[in-house]
Length: 311
Image 1 (cartoon, helix red, strand yellow):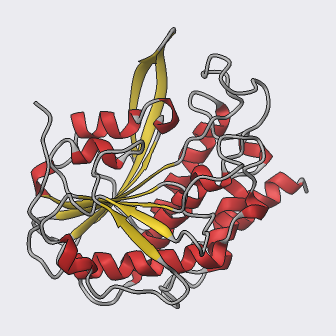
Image 2 (cartoon, rainbow, N blue to C red):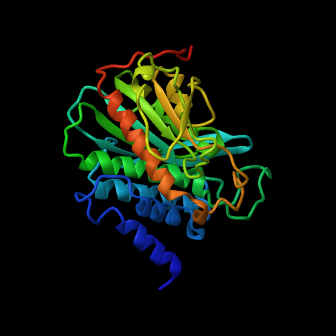
């Protein structure tokens, strides 16, 4: 057997075993997902490249195995095209799974699955032909997305909100997936409780801690954050709802946001952003902190948005 095929089999099996036996974020499961998504087989998950399509199909398979529903007909995919500089009609897709709890409002959990691929669409900004595996950016976020889906699907306590899990395409080329989704939402944006975005959560620096953006986007966030803590994780907040990741498009469309990011590092947007460098145990603790904050946010029937909608 080829090593790459074994990676696919192992990663695909992670969510089929013992789903009901544990709902706590698991470092081994996180590492396994990142090992596959950031493997050379996917060649950096570039938009409009075969590896990007494989990544989207992989996420859809995990959504199906977890029992998430489709809300775009019978498909987990929301296909779209966009233009970028001299490149026209670039194809991409969002991958969307729905946990229907019969609630009036919905929480959106998001992370982009694309990376630079072999850099063909970046007009020479990055070394063309080299594989940019993007383990931290953003296989780590996709692993977090799947862990949160795993947790809330298997949580035995009925939640008072629905959950919409979105793996965005085209983020590296201008937040294209979230831009398309907010322009063509599959459920009303005014029924979204808040949007939580994970982008680069796999290189935890204990001196810095993890930054959480969007603290100023809802009047209730100070109360939600007041007593939140997670052993082994230090965090700080940033009021800004705008930013260089997919939460931005939700914020400017009137949705409260939280944005999790462990910070920049020397491997950012380089071919050296590889899976062995992931800090999976720290990421599992970050996801535990996210669960605390999500659960605290669910004690409020509605959050009051603070910011500016697009004119």
